[in-house]
Image 1 (tube, helix red, strand yellow):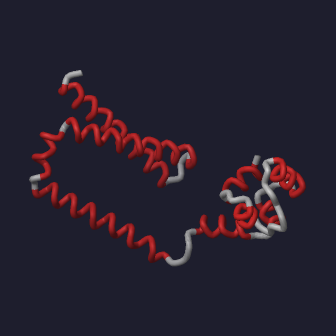
Image 2 (spheres, one colour; image 1 turned 90 degrees about the vertical axis):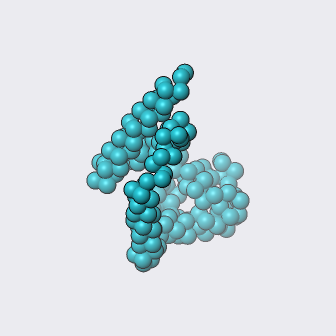
Image 3 (tube, one colour; image 1 turned 90 degrees about the horizontal axis):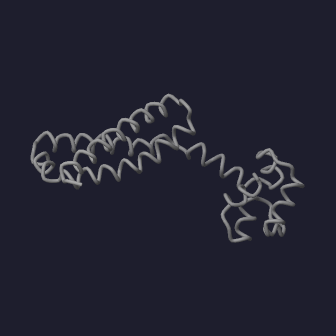
Amino acid sequence: MTSFKKKDLATSITTFTFLIISITGVMMFFHVLDQYTKEMHEILGLAFVLFALFHIFFNWKSMKNYFKKKSFLLSAILTLVITVGFISNVGNKGGEHPSKMVISAVFNAPLNDAITILGKDVQLVNQKLEKSGILLEDANSILEISKKNHTSPYKIVQIISK
């Protein structure tokens, strides 16, 4: 493949991936097809990084000229200031993130309560855990079970959810 075609391909794929990332970002903001959109946005976001790197690699000579312009420096500084503003604002909202609070509450709740919250039958869950080789030994919560079995509490929830 010629260098010209590689440049065209890298630029075209980067452009179209950027468009999809932009659209899914807006969809996420408005909570349209939340889970599906989030997964697509994340996967294509990773692909976008790869395609952008190819784009930079194949267009490096042209791009070096942009780096010398004042508009590039101004754009970089503006982007950095906005990004730092968002990042620094996250810590100012106070308190822990709600999803972390819920997960922590379920992991630390008495086992029967956690199983009920997860919408499962206590006796069936105990059977599933034992069948999976998980020892319950006086454990009072999902977190205690995970520690005693040297596994992740998420793995315990996965077994419970089957």
